[in-house]
Amino acid sequence: MAKKKQKPDFSKPKPQAVSQDMVSQIETVEENTENIDETQELEEKFFTDKIYYNLPLVVIAGRPNVGKSTLFNRLLHRRVAITADVAGTTRDPVESTAFLMGKPVHLMDTGGYKLTRDTGTMEAVMDDLVVEKTLDTFRKADVIVLLMDSGVITAEDEELIAELRPHWNKVIAAINKTEGGKNENDAWNFMQFGFNTMFRISATHGDHITELCTEIVSRLDFSRVTEGTEERAIRISLIGKPNTGKSTLSNRLTQTESSIVSDYAGTTRDVVEGTFHYANRDFQILDTAGIRRRAKVKEDVEYYSVNRAIKSLDQTDLVFLMIDSQEGLTEQDKKIVELAYERGRGIIFVLNKWDKMKEQIAEDRKFAKKAEENIRIMFGQMSYAPIVEISALEGKGIKNLMDTAIELYEQLNRKIDTASLNAALKDWLFKYPPPASRAIHFKIRYMTQNSTNPVSFLIFATRPDSVPESYVTYLKNRIREDLGFDKIPVQLEMKASRQKWEERFKN
Image (cartoon, rainbow, N blue to C red; front, side, top):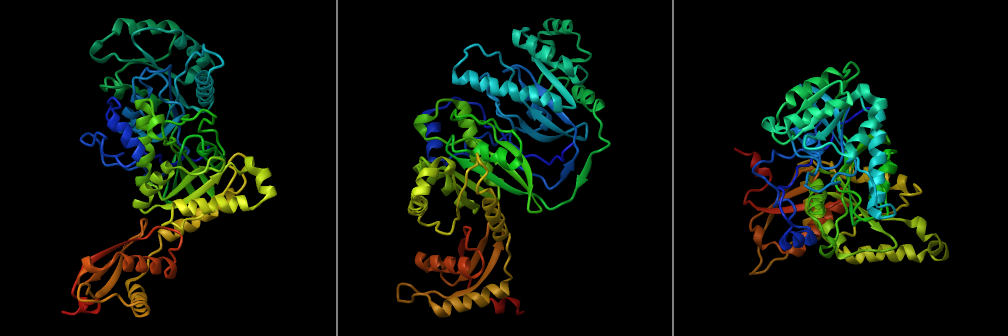
């Protein structure tokens, strides 16, 4: 079994209707963490430093809207999968490491098993893709928790049970929504299918979850599970508009089909996490939902999806902004990048779908130069950010992309000692002295690096509010160009101090 890593934790926004104000917040892409239910939310930690190998796989299956994502979140003790009263909310499998009765397992929430009737429609195609991926997980699973609604037995339940017959020894039946004995008599009707084990539970209220977990753990073999202490993986978020090739690139890098790929915009809803190894380094990649402009957003599920995409920026190292080379840039791309820049993330502009531009490129290489110029015009303050051309579908340009990503990651984690910083600062002040006049008068004392990833510096001056923005920009550029931070954003803060650096060590 392939090694398993700790998975990311994405909490769920408080369910509510999508008001015009919410939709506007999606368009500006600035709100997006403020409307989440912070009072009930634990401190967010998308990744942990522990690495587990050979974890047993526990799959939650069932028809749409029976509470699979709610149970998934309940077993994780945190909100990861999006839950909503909309059938088919979950499409891609959502995975994470959970601890059941103190034992680590690889837990997977699958898309709902849905009977497709309206053949030929795009929604029917999506349903077929979800069902296909769900059925594929059964073969890999060590335990399958079949979740059903206590209220009624449906044709979808019966068909899914039939599909599970070859894996019957893995199946644990759980009848949901039986809190306080509710629908207890109806729940017993499911025994007609001959389940070896059946539990009446409430994913929402937690009824009998302990008994369910005990049964799951008793079925699993933990003898091959090991805990690693290796350097944590490099974290990458794939961000961009819908249908720019994020899921195709994610599947290409992880060499899996974890993310459903379709020409249908908005296919991805939950954040789909994957892992891969390149150049002796471990990577964790987050395939996020496409972020669309306000007029295109129609449902609250998509609002939640956008929130997850934005929140992935809080705990990532690098951002790949996926750009469709045929469509070019939009203002929405600019807003996404602004959020990543504010967080000090390494940003790579990924021009995708060059495989469809072969004729233009073959005729005139100036097309590529023009595309790069357009990016530089829209992102005038980010001339340092790399631009990489790829074809995620054909796998071209991937090596260059990943080599660039490693270079950015190394810059994000570069630490300059204070003595070297102040030697450089002294040289910069000599070459370009600070402006001085009656209105503007200050002295720059010393500089320290106060953080890596994001890279941040503090410069202490006698009157920090008097330092012109143009001079701050000059110092930022010198830091970037002279100290090896030429491809990442650099944060610089001015603070008040009348004490010279050398005097700090005197009694």
